[in-house]
Amino acid sequence: MSHNLVIVPKTKIAERLATIVVAACVAALLYSIFKNPRFEWQIVFANFTAPALLKGLLVTLELTFFAVFFGFPLGTVLAAMRQADSRLLQSVSWFYVWVFRSVPMLVQLFFWFNIAALYPRLALTLPGLGELYSFPTNHVLTGFSAAVLALVLHDAAYTSEIIRTGLRSVPTGQRDAARALGFTNSGVMYNIVFPQAFRVILPAAGNQIISTLKATSVVSVIALQDVLYSAQEIYERTYDVIPLLIVASLWYLVVTSLLSMGQYWVEGRLSRKDQPL
Amino acid sequence: MKREVFCAGILMVLGLVLVQNLGRKAENFIPYQTDIAVPVAQDLQERVPAEYRRSGALLVATHPTTPPTVFLTPDTMQLQGREIDIMAAVAQLLGLKLYWVNPGSLGSTVLGLASHRYDIALANLNVTETRLKKIDFVSYFDDKRLGLLGLASTQGQVTQWHDLCGLTIGAGSGTENATVLQNHSWECKQVGAAPIIVMLFPSRPAGVQAIISGRVPYFLGPYEGVKAMAQGSHGQIVLAATLDRHGSYVGMGLPHPSSLTPVITDAVNRLIELGIYQKILDKWGISYGEIGKSYSNMDILNSVGAQNDGRALQ
Image (cartoon, rainbow over all chains, first blue to last red; front, side, top):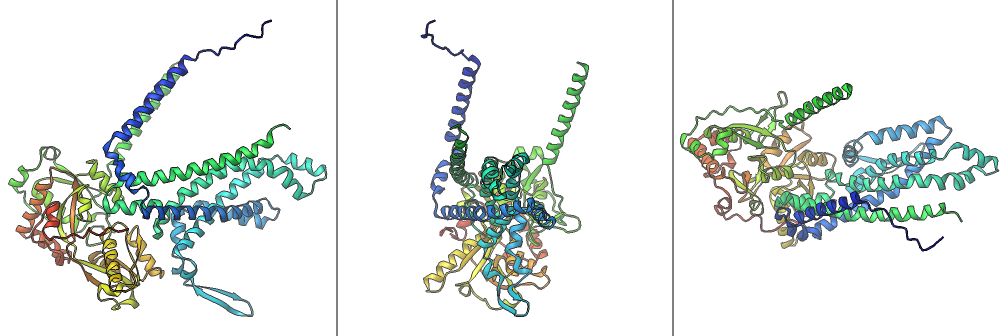
């Protein structure tokens, strides 16, 4: 038996043809996009790093960060409540998710921004001690904090569902088995459930962060200038509608790419544990 | 086999019905109401470009907000107002029918003009040099008066532009009023006063709600529009001040360039000559903004040497 036999892969003619056709289509598309003067690329480049837009980008990033930073812990608490034995905790969590997933983000933003119309002052009152402290609502809830509040509450509802699905993906048989082996309740969670649930949660959570990033674009309704609103504000004056929408989209592409890279990196790290030792 | 053919046939019929309905849905014309009746002007009608004479109609974009500019009647949901009457009178002079649509935002109005989806747009659009590079304009109103909305307690506290220095003022995003505020803010700084902080709202109702909840003390908007909002607010907000400016005109927007621009300009001038234009402004109580002559494109700005676009808003 000779060991010098070379393995020759079968020629995939259809695939090669398809590759050539798709390459030609992509080239034609790119050519037309960059050569079509109606895209007005010079306006796109001139505005790409305009100070107003960069300021808007910062607002978009800050809002996304805060929404995720506070939304995920709150979502985890809600998911834990949903898993609890207490009927009350379960119902409150269910009710919360029901309300905040149903009401459109735009309405929630408008509501929190204008909550002072309903409650002009916030006060801390304790029974027996009376009013300890009170202040105008608008001082605490600035436009930015109203937006953060709305985004966090909205995000928490979605996150709690993602986490709940993750936890449920681990079969109860595994928990029973672990408990039979003498693991404590927290030991079961930490050693058995979380490591497996994470792999289910992570892709959905990554998706959720990206959709939060885009959800921040509705903050324009309360006069907060995120990156999209800054672009709109410029084109409403100059009427350069398409170039400025391209600028805003390019920034969303950049940020989404960075977020996806982070997600894939973490996914890679987690899946390494799958490898046999 | 027969069954597959039958199913495919049913699917095709369903698809066709769907496509037809989608097409019909796109033509969402808003009915309008006007009491203006003008006979056709033969000389002007002959100058209407052939493509429009063939279709016999104009597709006009507008954005209903408040009376008296352009609004929907609450009972019948029909368009009414200054924009409707003036455009209806122009169309009658030219012997053309009108179809009105609401593109939903300024962005889609502008894009709709650029792509010739709409023939004309009337939505209280201010004429500026930058915008003239994108669309044609025909002037029909002198937008010289602005109104400041505030809570009832603020009435009389502002009498001139300088009183706004150091205050937070709301304005409509993309409006010339925002630019006016920026310019005055710059003047505040020139005389050593605190600048004006401008908060831009995507719509006037959002700005008004912000006054009621104490977010901003004032909102600056077109005089006639904010006056109507104050009247409709059951005393919650009032017209706190009236402020004047110079050299700002409202124009009909047309694609750039449009073969219609010259004949539309002449039609507006005919309405002025006939006294119909003045009658329309009187009807809506806005004769203060009467123009003596309608111009098109750069002539609008040259006619007053108005350069209100000089200092860009950043």
